[in-house]
Length: 116
Length: 113
Image 1 (cartoon, each protein chain N blue to C red):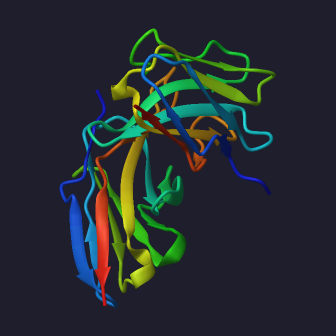
Image 2: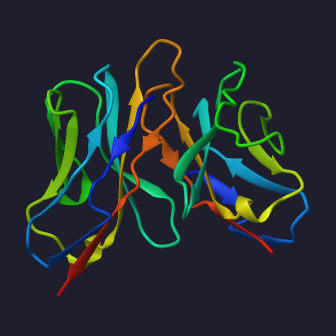
């Protein structure tokens, strides 16, 4: 079964520093990959997606991610974070096998804590 | 345009009672999903609707859980004889089609006393 691993449950970082949030998925079959952000008491907001094409994907709020098929990774990066980026970040995958519902399988989330 | 709307935003009920949670997807979105977010289990898929096809119920944790989608739009998730372990945030998402990004509502926070 498909699974997603986010090794870091919490990442503290100072404002204006760069950050990388790690995500690895289990399956080598064709997949769609997503990063979502969740602010307190809100639902999930799509940051970016990889469906096909260029392996470097740019999203909202200055975030980007790189799809690496050989390492089955989809790490999220931002060159300079702001206090307002403090939130929970979820990596998710849906597989493309015939008949799949494209339900999302989520990682356990990474809390990005930006400090002044 | 309007996003995915869920109601109520919060629900507190006693153990053993039935609850209904409502989801209004984005207009024109044919795919609708329910997920549950809890401290112990993270984000879990519950059920999926696509057009007039039979729903994928593979994520429902027990037969106390059911869902329907009327007229291809509004969906209701029903939990019968609630238990304390049902306490969680229930999230609804919709997408324009299979494989397309899912857009989430703000969820219903369910607390079972």
